[in-house]
Image 1 (cartoon, rainbow, N blue to C red):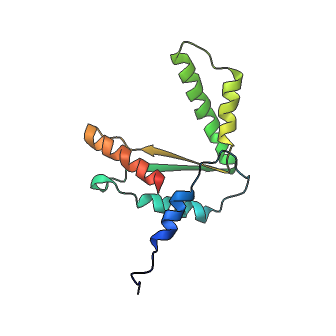
Image 2 (cartoon, rainbow, N blue to C red):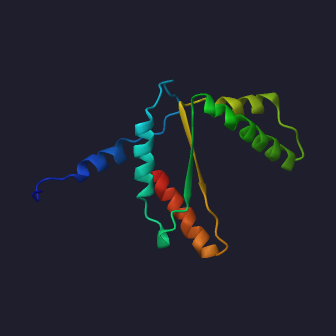
Image 3 (spheres, rainbow, N blue to C red):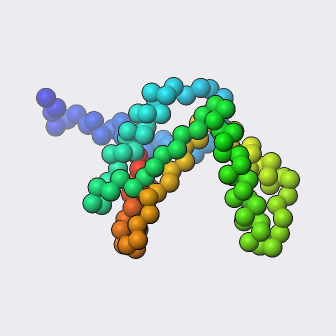
Length: 131
C-alpha cells in the first residue's frame, strides 16, 4: 500500500524536467519492444470523445529509405509554391533527415468534417506526442 510520503510522481516530474531535444543521435538499433512501449504510452493520451485520432508510422533501418521520396516531394512542392526549383542541397538535406536517427516516427491524424472535432483531434495528437 502506498503511504502519503511516497511520491511515484517523482519519476514523471524528473522525466519532464530533464527531457531535452537532441539533434545528434547514436546509430544504435532501438528494440521493437521499446518503440511499442512508447506507442502504448501515446495511446493513453487524453482525446475528446475517445476518437483516438492519431496514427503512428514507424520507420527504422532500411525502411527509412521509403521516406526519402515523400520528403523530397514535399521540398519540391514548397519550392514550386514560391515559383522556384529546389536546390540539390535542399534535396540532399531532405534525404539526410530521413537517416538522422535510428527510428523515425511520423504522427498523422484522422481528419473530421466538423471543425471543432478536428481541432480536438489535433490537440489529442499533440498530447499523444507529449506522452
